[in-house]
Length: 538
Image 1 (spheres, rainbow, N blue to C red):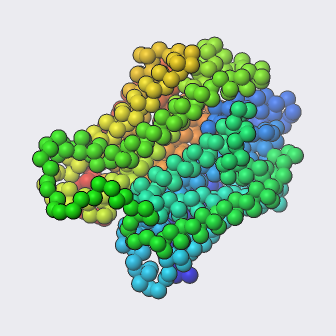
Image 2 (cartoon, helix red, strand yellow):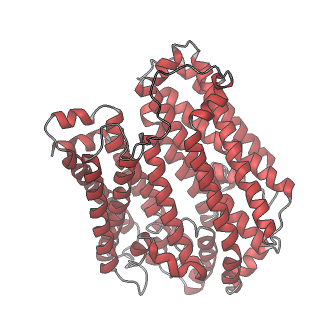
Image 3 (cartoon, one colour):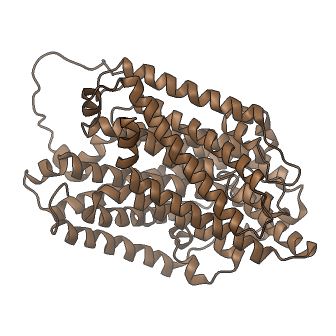
């Protein structure tokens, strides 16, 4: 069990942070619903109508709920419905860090030298995660039970906890396989996250659209959604949970076999094309030496996959829009609500609401991966090599900011201009100026996350990824929960997502955009200052 203790100790800060966040989230959701919903059936019916409209907006994040009149149904959707994606990102990150991250940090060789077999390393990493996921799930259920005024039964909460642990094990299995395929921790994390997003999107939108309901079962996450013991009239799907457990075991076994058949530090399938015999001659191309083109060229493969990802999202939402409109028009309350917020053009408004929200999440994730790369450069020795060129530490921060601005602008413009062309071909017209404005304003939105990450990386690079992920998740849920609970406007303005707004549907608040620019400037300025006050790698 030496590997189990090693993995738990190595990632103890992240594990404790996630458990504490779940305790706080469970208490906030249960107590918030009990405060807002009221006691009479009429009050709960009014709140349920608002929640249903919110659930439709979040259909790309969690499946559409079936019952919101009770606390159990609300918690089943608002908490346990979104956790396969939110905690799934954490599960993928842990799997990749435990396996591929340990290889990059030269810790795997120490474990193997101590007598651990490769298959045992993978299995004990899974055991460590099982212990972690079980503790996190039980902590969440305990916080929900203690704040629910006995409306949630412990037996039902335990059944839901079992389903959550099993689906997280499945996602961890995806991460272990991704760790065998990527050339580095960063690329392996990208593979795992892309797979998770695709499966979650298929499951969530399959519950919102009749056109996709037939293929929803292709996503194993739909097997988890089949278990709904907390909702009134719901039950625990033993078949779906068992199938997920079998799939998780199969993925971990596959990862162990792949680890046995590849070299340490190398992917399972190494590219052989383009390899030439002979010496390496330095290139005489000068543009590559410039910090922005050079950084973009170096990350050209990863950026290409990000472009493919956002284009697939655009195609998905534009094609899905007519079916979603037809479905939502069958609900009078939702039709009236959507007509109001989209100025009568529901199809265009839905694309704006759903697509912009998803692109924001992808760009926030892009900023997180960029910050993870900066932190890795600091601890792996690459930053030290870069400083020996020589260049100043302030220049390193400026290069990082310039790369993030250029990459975010490229991704946003490609995505929204492609949306403009594709939607126009299907009879959904957007104003070109508004589309370009929405794309341009996505740049300070993305760079603001990068500025927070750069500031933390210059102070403590080891925890930068976790801190920025926590900021992104908190920022996202503030804009969703604050209106529902009637929180003041200044709380909403703590969310980067709210500061951006939705320029495709409504005019932006320019003072909020100015606040994003202030965060960008202050973050990278502070990062440049702190980088000069700390030794590299510490």
